[in-house]
Image (cartoon, rainbow, N blue to C red):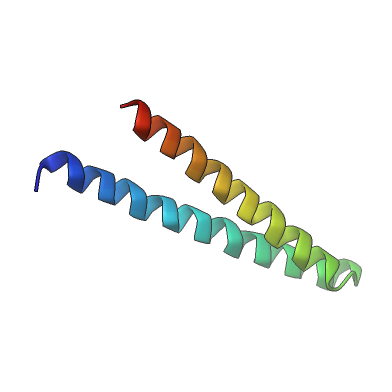
Amino acid sequence: MPKGDDQNMGRALGLGFQVLAGAVLGFLVGSWVDRRFQTAPWGLISGLVVGLAAGMYQLIREGIRINKD
């Protein structure tokens, strides 16, 4: 297997963790907002949506960058 394939697999794995981290962070912030302001479930839902959107943005941006190379 060429060395470039290993690097791309590592980047792909990292992107998966970025999407997961965005979702988890959004969940935590949304849960905190719900507890703080008694807005359940809207803080959690909006936090998850924003976290997933940020993760997907990173995924698309990195995918475009990899395809340019």
